[in-house]
Length: 400
Image (cartoon, rainbow, N blue to C red; front, side, top):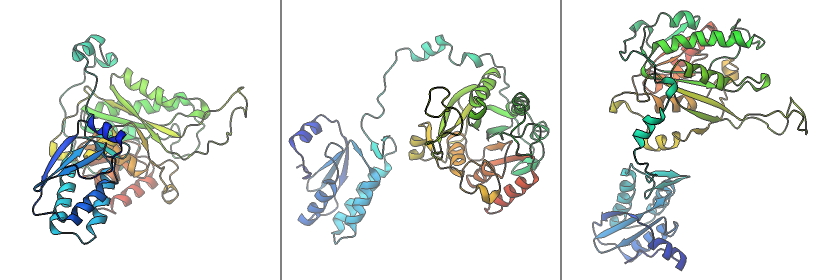
């Protein structure tokens, strides 16, 4: 017998065409009429085209299409606080447990999709066609060594104060798993100055000499991820310039993430023409994360060192992240910190626990702090003694 959810004729017809995922759950005991009324009230809060049930004397069958799992849990918990039988209490616990144990599903808004989420257009001979197209042709002739090396223990879990170029030259080839950084805009000729008036050609020459060393020390299969924004006031497409550099160095472009910051007031413009097509000035509310791999797209790691959850993975592979900017920049006296949440997502999505994470422009240590609390090993480099002291202080607030 159908569980009693309200259905109009349209929904009934819709439900008949859905190939639900069926979850049978045994009933231990006998449900009272009051119990059945509570079940009806719970599931009436959801469309029958999303989730429905039927019930017999000894079995409860759950029919899943899609559902807001958190809403369902909250609804069930609210009814569990009422006076209900032990049989219904046990059944409700089983429903939550069964749903929670399903690890394969899609996401659409807040809903988990249990049916049809994995359907995709099948391309006959896909692999052969990819090879014929010569995918990532710009990196196919790379000759990176596949032999990875151990890094001396003296560098592990350290904040190193000094010029990145000098320190990086001391590290062995193929020894770092992940490099995540955001280059300072003003490090060019006088890093400790807050002046942005240095020559852009000299800036990029200095930056790329540091990135040359980063590529050398990156492991085969390692990733380098650069957080950058276009320098729109000078019309410098820095994300394109940096990506072009890595492609010329034959790293494989894995993709880019738009970090939506939602923090700019776009109701006005300080540059360009006002209310005229003469010279409109475009404003960005986001920054870019450009992601590159050395030698191969696949990174090897132990399964037990994966710490990203199913929900995190499904959400974070959608490459537009809405994360508020760092709110504590005044506290650290740093003008351009990225938030811990950004570093957390990057590290969990692109590295394994125990991997070695490097930030050659570590600033006040967001990357190294997050690496520590997520059980990664780390190296942070910065030329500013003040920033290095603050990075060390942050590390001291948490235990290994």
